[in-house]
Length: 287
Ligand SMILES: [Zn+2]
Image 1 (cartoon, rainbow, N blue to C red):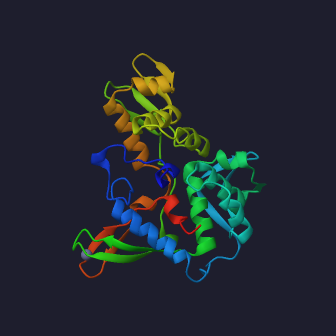
Image 2: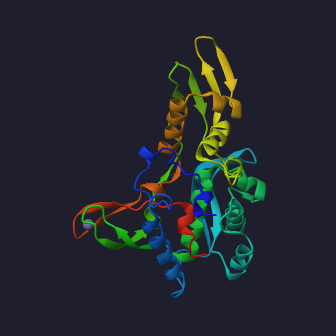
Image 3: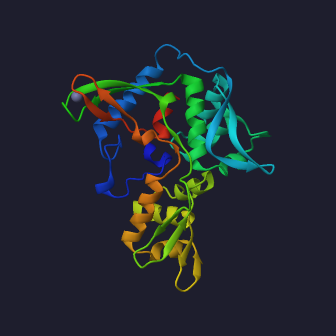
C-alpha cells in the first residue's frame, strides 16, 4: 500500500502530471521528502502556534440545523489521540476519518458526529486536517533534498503551511460542455464520495476515474432534446475518453479547499521558483 491511496490522484493523464512529489512519478524526491519529515518527528517537540482550542474557517461549508456552518472548532491532538490513531492503518481513509473525529470539536453550533464529518466536502475535510496539523505540529514543514529544476542542486526548503490558499467553490454553475454539445453538471466530492472512490484497493486509474465520475456527475443535459440523464457508473463508462478528461480536468483545476498542490518557493541561489506540491497525507507524516 502506498500513501497515494489516501488522496485521489488527479494526475490521471501523464501529460497533465505536474512536477508533484508523487511517489509513482518521482520516487527520489518523494522518499527524501518523506524521510526528512520522519526524521524531524524524532527531534524536539514542535511548538504549536495555536492554542489547543481554535475556531477555523472552512472554505465550502455545510448546512447544520438549517444554517450554513462556515467555521469549525478544532483542537491539538494529544498523546491519547496518537495512541488511538496508531491502531488504525495510516494508509487508509479510516485514518483520516479518525483524525477528524479526534481533532474536530464542532461545526458551526453543532457537535460533530462521524456521519456529519463524512458528509463534508473533501475541500472542507482537507482544510480541517490542515488546521489540526498546524495546531498539533506547527505551520512549518521541512522538505529536504528537493532537486531544483533550475540549477539541478538538491535543496532543503521550509514550507509555511499557514500561507496555503483556501479556495472556495467556483463562481457560477459547475458544468462543462461535452463534445456533442451536451452539458455535464458536476459537483465536487464529499467524504462519502472519497470513501467510495478509494474503496477498491486494486482499481486501475481508469476504474477510479469511473468511480469519481459516477459520484461527481449530477446529470448530463441535452439542451436540444430537453433531456436530463442522472449520473451513474454506466453513464460515466459510456462517455468518450476526451469528455471524461475534460470533466476530470475541470474538477482538478477548480477543486476548492487548501491549494497544497500549487505550493512553491523560490530557490534563492538561482532565482528559480521550485514547485513543492503536497497532499494531505504528506502533512501528517509526523504521526
Ligand atoms: Zn536552483
